[in-house]
Image 1 (cartoon, helix red, strand yellow):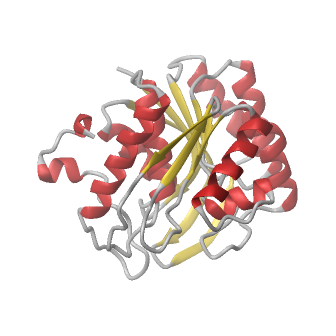
Image 2: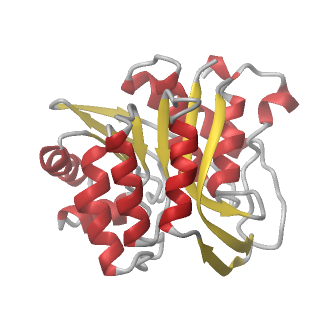
Length: 268
């Protein structure tokens, strides 16, 4: 069985973070492991408390994982502390981790900064260069490149700049579009578009976590980058289409829609 490590924060309501990642990895037929960067008190209406682990304890978690069940792929989610980012980067280099997918959670959909300046700097200088793939949304790509993205051409320009700067593959997520959800992969000088329909579902909590962990799962199983993204996007689309409606706010996806519809994940 292929193994995937997720490094992220815990969402006690189960919609995002570690919980969303474990569900997604499991539904892709891989074995999920986790190194928790923070505990959060949150639900569909918001985040009400954050308790970060110490760098020492995060390092213990990573040591335990890498020295026993070595991951075939690694997904990294939101890490809000510069010292924790440094700890992760050092461990990834020490153990020569492979197939690293980084979701650079820096800016909210509304454009608000989610990281302090020192953490954002550490993410850019220490962690992003280690990733085989980064998956910024449009606001994050704008922050990372300084390019204002208003068109498909702008997305290509931003992706080219990111790939040149960090020497890895870049997937700019176009989910902020009004009518479409088209994503752009830029890898080794080639642009590939993944066209998607806008799903009429207001419950989108954890979509970024789900997509990145699905990509990591597919990479772990041996698919190339383009097919890993295509399959992950198909999985995310079906999880949204399933129309799960839980909570009083921005609700979670139906990660286990396969069990309800008896559709094989491998078909996507």
